[in-house]
Length: 100
Length: 200
Image (cartoon, rainbow over all chains, first blue to last red; front, top):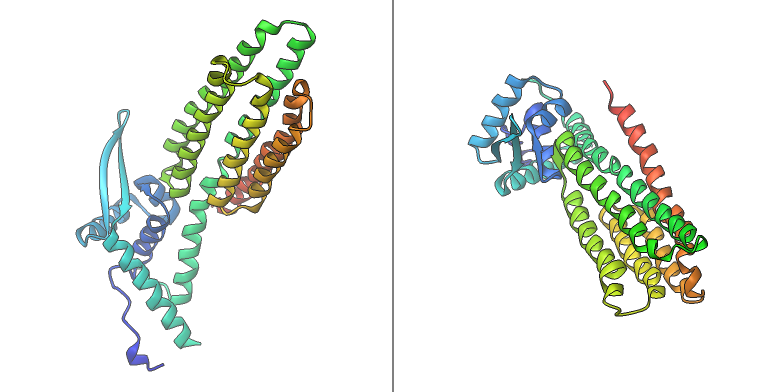
C-alpha cells in the first residue's frame, strides 16, 4: 500500500484523553464525568477541557443534572462522534497493516 | 499532550472497553438473590404443606417475591448511581427482566387467582419464562453458560410434565441452583478478578 494513501488520523481524537473518552462512550449508552475521570486516569481540569473540545466539535453531548443535591455530568457520544471514532479506528488499523 | 503510538492506542482502546464490561459482571448479586428467593419460597411452601397450613402458601410466595422486588429496586438505583455508566446490554437486560417479572406475577399469582388454570401448571409456566429470561440474557451478554442454563429451564419445564403436580415445584430447587446460583457465583468470581486487575 502506498503510504501517501493512508488517511491522516483525526487530530481531535488523536490524544490519549479524548481517545479514552470516545472509546468508553462508544461502548456504553452514557457515562458520568467521574467515571470517565477515574477510568481514564486524569484530573478534573484536564478532562473538562477535553470534553469541551469534543462537545464543541459535536462528537459528544453533555447533560448536567442533579442526583439529589449533587451535580451530575453525563456524557454521550453523538452519531457524528461515533462515525468519527469508527473512521479513526479504520485508519488506525490501516496504518498498523501498512507498518507490518 | 500525551500521544500514543498506533499499537499503544489499540491497546488503550481495548483496555477502556474492557473496563466497561466490569460493570456487567457486577450484576452477579441480582442473579444470586433471584436464585435464593424462589428456593426459600419453595422450601417455605413445602414446609407449610407438611404442617397443613395451606392458607399460608400464597402469603409465603407474596412475601418472598416482594422481598426480591424491594431488593431489586434498591440495588438497581444504588448500583446505577455507583457504576457511573449505563450500557446498552444492561438497559436491554433491565427491560427484559422487568417484562419477565410481570409475566411471573401474572402467571404465578393473577391467573391462578382468576382460576384460569390449576396451580399445578404454575411451575411449568414459571420454568418456561425463566428459560426465556436466562437464555436471552446469555445472548445479550454473549455468555454461553447462561444460554445453557436457559435451555435447562426449558428441559425442566418439560420434565415437570412427567411429575405429579404436587412435586413439580420441588424440581425448581436443583434448576435454580444450576440455572441462577451457579452463573451468579461464576460472575462474582469474574467481577472480583476484574476489580483486582483494575486496582491501581
